[in-house]
Length: 111
Length: 115
Image 1 (cartoon, chains in turn blue, brown):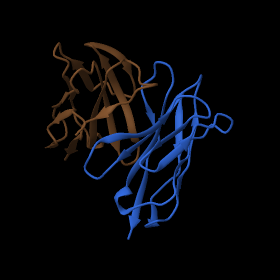
Image 2 (cartoon, one colour):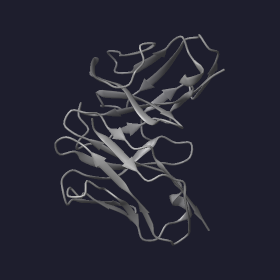
Image 3 (tube, one colour):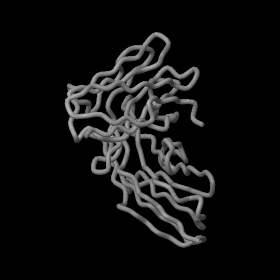
């Protein structure tokens, strides 16, 4: 079945450092890919998405590019802030299937 | 605020008991999804309803059941509770029955502790 594998956390970075969270997927067909973020004490919220190969999703300084050849959707940000501290989930949906999530990566940014 | 409301926020109960978690979806959304979040398993999809009908089923135990009512709110019933059922249970909603181009809106979750 469909699955998502993302890098284990936790990740701790200093403010203004570069961030990359790796995400690879296995799916039948052509899935849509998502990054969700969960801030402390809150539910998940959509950060960005890409629905076809080579699409780049972006929001709040975060970017991810749908790479069909490497089945990847890595999350990147050039300069993280303390307010970016959260758990980040990579997810996919193909056809009629509900979202399948990775296990999440906890990011802590220190000033 | 996502517009999805879950109650209760916290629940502590004993093994063998039964609990009901409630979810009100975002206004206008017809689909409701239930997910279980635990430390070791991550986010696991349990079940989806669309406009009152069961649409998809995931890793939901037989001890668990759900339904969506005519007013579109949903309830997740957990019975014969075990210690391992302790988790955060999320409800999410969406307009359509598919999410491959849209997005899910999540509630803040119901934290269940089974002692």
